Amino acid sequence: MAVFLQTMLYAFLALFPILSPPTMAPIFHQLTSGIPVRQQHRLAFQVGLYTFVLLTCLLFLGGWTLKLLGISVPPISIAGGLLLFHSAWQMLNRDVRVDASEYQDSMLDKAFFPLTLPMTAGPGSIAVTLSMVPEGHFLAPETILTYLARACGIFLAALTVFLFYRFSGPFIRRLSRTGEATIKQISAFVLLALGVQIVWNGVRAYIIALGHS
Image (cartoon, rainbow, N blue to C red):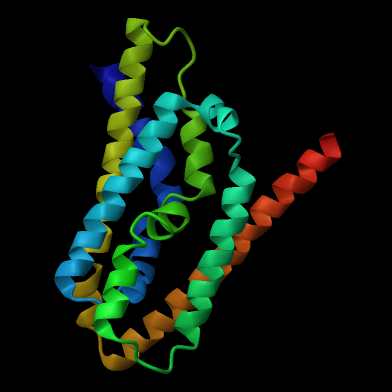
């Protein structure tokens, strides 16, 4: 039992700094500020759920499945980074109000991409999860317990994503209008930098791969 808890805690502590829910929560709130609070809460739950499902599938299926499908992390990095850059640029230059129902529908369609992948569970968390794939025979009791423990750690990390995203709104709304506007601008800038960083990570991975070929 102690080993199980230790392995679970290891997975949680490995993912939590990469997912960084305290940092990403204001960005999530800003991106979803145009929809009703109930829909924000629903999106927070969906992002937390999708984060758990995505990372758990990666843990159990492993990198060989990505290779089988011809999918690698660099293309995800570049495409997702460009999309985040576009969203951040819109946040920094948002002058006109869009139709509420149209904005609501568009945000609900983005629960998985880009709110979950790559904004929340990006290439960093994908790489960390793939590095936690246990060695040994899949059906061995020790390997199964390791899988389950690390899946529980992923669940805890995804739960923190939901909690921070779910309760970020009330905290931000308690601030003055100046404080809220400041957080919005900082969040947009952080998201802009995150998009650039994700794109660069993808480009750098391609450069390294070309250098080794």
